[in-house]
Image 1 (cartoon, one colour):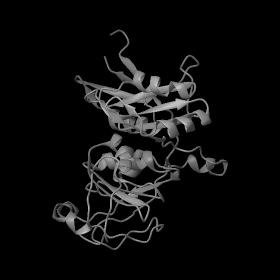
Image 2 (cartoon, one colour):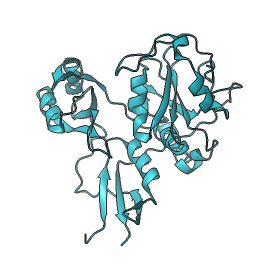
Image 3 (cartoon, helix red, strand yellow):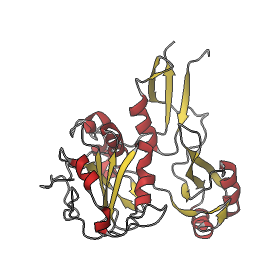
Image 4 (cartoon, helix red, strand yellow):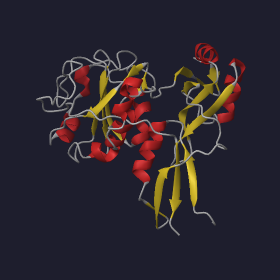
Length: 307
């Protein structure tokens, strides 16, 4: 290869930020790669960040980008469409996105395509979650927002748990899995729909840090969310293993089904009054430690490999 570099484009800014933080400096085929934000020349394809994006879930494994583009084409002019694939296997992750130029077209697609059959499954549709533009009053604060390096050092390396709050409606296990799965292997998810928050435990501290930096301040189900470190005690892993889920009623992990819980006060899951941010909880399990800020980022990154 004469030019040992490539470009990787992500649909979401937060996914690109997580990949940059995770891959920069790693070795591929014995050579260390450098990952940076790519410049965007005028020849690049049109920016769709101001278009209207529809999330399409419950896709059959055989459904392709062309399939969803064809299915949604009758509703209006499409600026972009894609099925999201697993980077390791190349297989569909079961969801995708369709972007429209016109808001009314996107709304009609959401209303009329939800529950329709595409391939062997009924699909579900909703507005895609995206980071809202920062208000003018906060532009100055954006320059002081934390980086991954800041967040990863805010908590113990053994802490792998993220607190995500502010979702006043529509909070489900599947929604959290869809939101956080791009950042690493998820070991545990607990949602508290009536309180509007959840806890997500990753397999590594770094994955949790990527999630905090990338998801904090984004819009999920129409709500701007806050993400912090969960407060873990040394025996947290033991507590997870000892939890008897039957004490809390139905624990369902069926795709798309909301979770039903009883009173959560057992083994490491003590729930504080919602809205108390930035204060540690005096408890055995989780709490909120500090509030990282998210800096808006472009989508495209460049990867180069030393010769």
